[in-house]
Length: 150
View: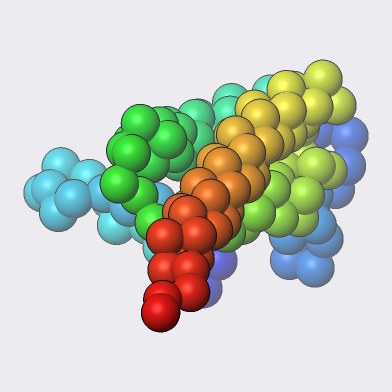
């Protein structure tokens, strides 16, 4: 059974059907503590609070992605497959931004988030190009060394 806490100053009337459209759904992940109430789902309706929660969740996800990308970019022995997997992660983050965040936060904040992820994606694409050029250079060098033997 779901409960809705109503406030008198809200202009829109909330009911079971339109509450999901107005707010942002989230599932809190709390460790088991005896002092906390167990909650399966929260719907945040207040725009300022919704924006703060989304910014915080983006920051956590972006830090994880940033660390992954920076570790990969600094690793000279990273394979093209590793870089491609990391590039897929940035594409996934952009898709999440597009689907989940675009309508929930203001445009300036959305553009900032989008540009951060796009910059990481661009750096990874540059790394893939460098890896492919490096690979082509060494395959050409090996072919030259082979030559024709008599």
